[in-house]
Structure formats: structure tokens, C-alpha cells
Image (cartoon, rainbow, N blue to C red):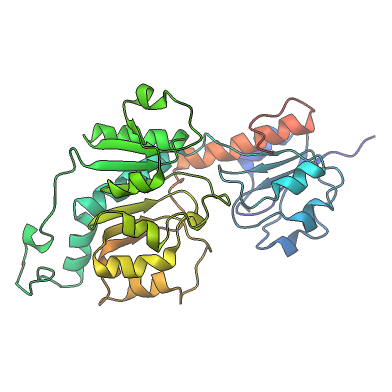
Length: 340
């Protein structure tokens, strides 16, 4: 009698795995490894048929070359920068992602951050809670008044810039368009015609897009091309008083540039859901500035813990979709969303 195939969830989920068992229970043994690093996988994945990987662990050559029976590595998410795709391809192991989960939630979060920052909601709430009622830069009392955050400008007609017009970028563009904003995008890999379908504008270079933007919202994968694409020089190309939103991948932004940009007022605000290292060190300059009541980032920076994807429905979606991908692999069916 042949051994039952094994599927492992490498990281992130460590509960009873009820959603995954409903999909896989009749064809595979399912185990949650609760790994915190790649070292935790040693001796535990070599004979598995499929691996579900989230964002807390990376799979490099030293793990992939030990996989003797693996038919699929499926990333529970969109980005696949924590998998060595080339090595997996060399060893004949397909890597798939889940490109359609959480699109609504991430798009909603990007817009929520945009509105909270550009309408002064976060700023006024933070200042009032701290007992600060002086108008910035004047020393005059603002009191219980709109003047606390003055001047704010109307959003209608302002340029909302989308970098990366994939599923999530498109969803964000439509939401910003509904607010009456002038939506423009930069994505050199998007075929012509999407701008017409969505009723938005294409801008041919990133520099040109940054130069006209009131809000820049990032929705691109992390690649060698996009790593630290938004650095101090890129931020300097944005107009003074503009806003930056990142719900994509942490490494796309050089976050060390943010404290100075916020302190100088060049950035009026930033909403950051993802960081290059998660969780970040408590001594990271961005967190130090964010916690400091005397630094403008204290009131003008929104940080969330890689949570833009989350809703109960979205979480269930991703668990079911990763399990369904593994089921196809175990049964020898055609795979979907293979990225390598």
C-alpha cells in the first residue's frame, strides 16, 4: 500500500487547519510546521509532495535542493520574492502564487490610508489625543477646530498615481476614480488598452508620474528592478506636500528615507503596511521617528503590520485556494498560476 502524500504549511498558520483539511483531507496528510526561519524546515520537508508558504520564511537553494518528491511550492499570497524561483525551476519544481486573493481588501486599505491622511483624519486624531492644539508652524491655538490641520485641499482633480496596474492596482485605480481623482499609472509591462478600459491615464516613465502626483500608491512586486525603487531621490521628485502609500512589498521603498521626508514636509504623510523586515527592529529609524512625539512622523505616518490583505473572508479565500493548488499537484492535475 502506497504512503499517503504529505502536504506541509511551512509558516504563519498553526491552528487546526480546518479549511485546508476540507480540501485535502481525502488525498494527503496535512501538517503545520510553524517555522520561523528556513532552519526550522531541516528534516521536515524533504519527502513532502507540496509546500504551502506564506511570508515569514524563505525557501532558498539549500532547502529546495533537498526536496525529493515535491510537486509544488505554493505561495499564500501574490509576491514570490521569498522563493528562489530559478533553483526551483532547475529542480523541476513548479512555484505558484494566489494572485486573486485579498485584492478588495488591499485596495480598500490603500484608499483608507489615502483618505485618512489627505483629509487630516489621522493627523487630527493623533494631535488631539496628545493634547496638542496649536496650528503647525504658527504657534497659534487651533483648539477644537479644523484650523488644527489647515490647510487641506480638495481631492477631486488631484493626481492619484498607481505604480503597478495588476489586479490590486486596477482595483485601487477604480476606487480613486470614484473619488473624482485624476488617476494615472506607470506599468511598463501592461499592454496598451488597459487605460482605455479603466478610464485612466498611462504615464510613460516613473519619474514623470512622480512629478505630477498628489498621492503615490505602490502595487508592484518586489524584483531586482523594483527593489528600493522609491528612495530619497524618487521622493524628491514628488511635489512638496504629497503622500506615499505602500501596500505592496516592503523592499520597494527605502524606508530610511521617510523620516527626513516627513520632517521636512516634503511628504505630508505616508501610509506603510509592509516593511523590508517584519517585524522590524524597535530601533529602526522609521519606528523611532514614529514613536517620537516631537517628530512629524508621530502624527503623519500610519503603520500597519502587513495587514492590508486581511478580512475574515479574504483569509478563508487564501487558505482554500492554496489547498486547492496542492490538491491539483497531488492528483497530477494541471497546475494554475505557475510563476517560474
